[in-house]
Image (tube, rainbow, N blue to C red; front, top):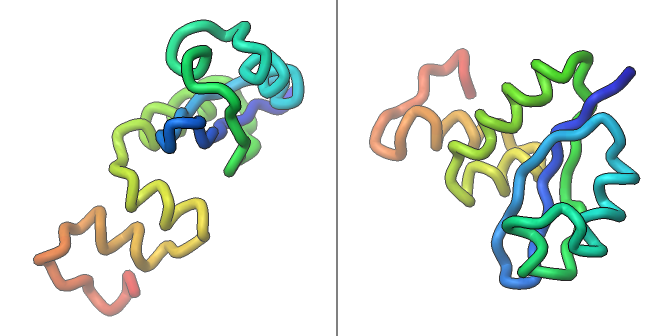
Length: 101
């Protein structure tokens, strides 16, 4: 069974990060406002990014990690710009070691 971590773009411009074992069904529930909480008051939502994980634990860990990131880091990750993700992780005033560029 596959699990997914995902990021939604909400109607107010914010991002929502979650995880599920059925991405299609979860998206439908979010769109109908059936998930309650954060997204139900920010409809419609749009799936921006998802990643398949091997286990629920891996998907949950990824969700918690991404939820801790700021907007710029999330956007860089969704673009696949890992150089920027690393720079943000290291802090803007810290030069990156060459092996991380």
